[in-house]
Length: 168
Ligand code: SF4
Image (tube, rainbow, N blue to C red; front, side, top):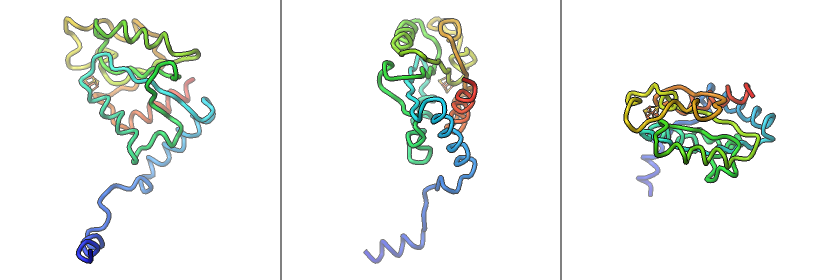
């Protein structure tokens, strides 16, 4: 046990501390305020992958970790479109997924918004022209906001969400 504590004090804390990241703290505060103002403190997002390489989803997963911790700001990723305010769409609109994306959108109660995430939904990804892809997402859905990047990092996604909240 003594050896453990010796090592613990010698090495110090290895994990990053979100409290000392001022840019992140400022962004978190703005996001929390906007969610409180526009969505009474609770914004529910249904994410749908319409044909991605999964890097965009990995970046979104990071938003739920203790560092970014979006749930503390009132932003939740929900399992059902019926509980959602926003459809967050990643990936290319593939032939096979397009009906399911449209179905998910249909099930979201009004008022609802679509945000596209990454280069794929706007057909700017490296593999956009394949036999399996349809037109850009905006040809199928009323896209309210786009978050660019390939993939966008968690901070960029947070900035994108803030831009969206300010816009609506
Ligand atoms: S935008 Fe880039 S990272 Fe995101 S799903 Fe498409 S190819 Fe992958």
